[in-house]
Image 1 (cartoon, rainbow, N blue to C red):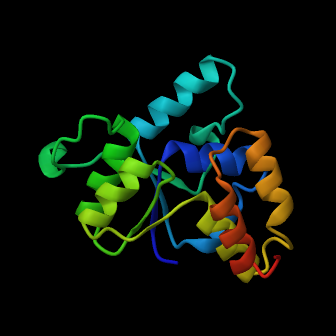
Image 2 (image 1 turned 90 degrees about the horizontal axis):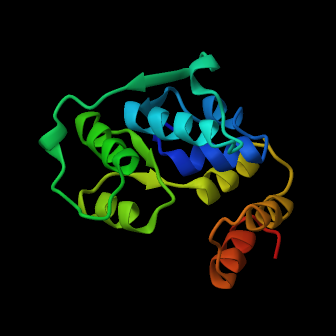
Length: 161
């Protein structure tokens, strides 16, 4: 995978699965927008189990240059908006997004994307993890939104059906 730009939820869930280390194994560079760093820091202040991004040497924090590059979408959070803006400024990067609206906007803007589930599948293909199913079970315990159809498709793609 080429360079990636991470949203908050991907970082949160990979951290909580103790799999944050897969990102630099799957990507050339890992960018995190400043708004995502702020969201993570607020979460840490509220006792949410989140990674301390400033302590991770392979994360590169960036702020989009052109804040007006993305059309206004009322329900898009600042983290998702900055992920999409950075992706527009850095053609060829992959946006790491779990939020449905952000993924629809990325699709409309022709921004390559994947999310937590896609990273788990890529990790299994790369031999970084041995199985996806126990991780899906843990994600559901962590309140990750995963419907039965998506779960079935992911397990099929992982050859674990």
